[in-house]
Length: 557
Image 1 (tube, rainbow, N blue to C red):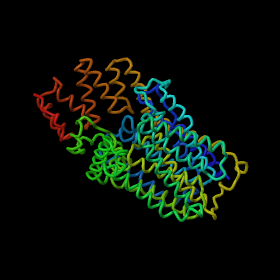
Image 2: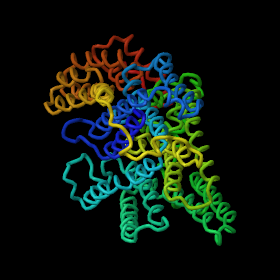
Image 3: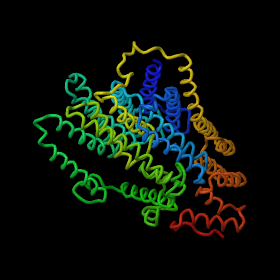
Image 4: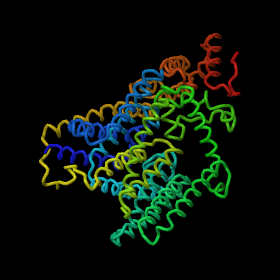
């Protein structure tokens, strides 16, 4: 039956997707060596997966609840509405801002990946998915150890154990997630002794790397994930079941103390609270303000940075310096709600709700310790916690979306009365994939590649122009399709340093035409000698609108 062959190919695509996304980097070919190449992989594989899902036809619809399809459709369609209604720059909303790439293309791919993962509904596939996260951590760990030792073969702009994820917070989070899976599998009943030792050594190594990053994200989510895994372990052994309630209450106590610590209260405050927590409060406040100000359609996809100065409030403006800014709320939920309003975040929470419902059903169904379900669920919960304090970095976030779909599909695959055909057939029983179907999968991969290659290519060509030191060439490259406001700001800065005022004026006009909320553009417009008094006053008024509590904004005579 052709359905079996399509699902088999879909599994291959999904199992290859996440490790490649996490590990791939492009330090020698692009200015952004982390995010754009990862997006290229995600888009290529996601569109290939989408092709196989569409080829399944009606059977794919029948494999998932209608509400999940509705939530996914609402999420995607509301992103389209946000693009049309918000008024934010179209290219920015489609591909995302520099260094983030959390625009329409990225989130569309993640929704497709979630749906495709849920459709498979084969236990062995979900077991392999958990194993794949642990296997991905092996090369990531080795590379991070080279970085810890100061032996990184790549000359990054800064030296730190960020592995292939571009930031120590992201590597800390990834190692935390992988360590949860590895620890649970290490303590699985009847686990091979040598493998158990290897897994525990890797966990110890990864926890050491997390400490070297200086980021507490990995430790926090590891403890949270293992706390949940411990509950399932206690519940699965009859002699320990009397401790279920005390264990649960102690978990609530730990959660409460951690929450208090975020506000510099309680015994854990000295381990958790820090200046960066205050900064995150500022970012969260601004994200909530954007959501409340634009509750229906948001400020536009990945456009948080355009509004941060205006809505951060006086306290955040003056806490350190007005120039401490950000282009993300450091909270995925607030980033989504700010981007597309309440409908978008409701749709996202509905997707998570289906995964949570599946996990609840799985946990009620069996009192025995299922290491793969426990690893899957505990890691997913840890990801949701990390999402509340961090950014949707594609190399980490891809696992969260895969595991969301995996929980939904795993619940179906483990039903005693399941009649899912592909899960009951051996590989040899499945017919080969027709050549036409394989070709369509390649076409889907190519479509995703082309869409994501546009910003990757623009960034790579800008890097080449940057190395020439020629601001004219940089400006030309910054105007290319797929380039961002940041590229144009760099070209503007180069023109200013070259004292090329005619070029500065040309770049400023182009920058503000494309990105009318660009703060740097209005700053330069105000001080240009070629600006008329009316233009300078207009720039001053605009700057005050964009950053109302900034004391450094003054009229220029």
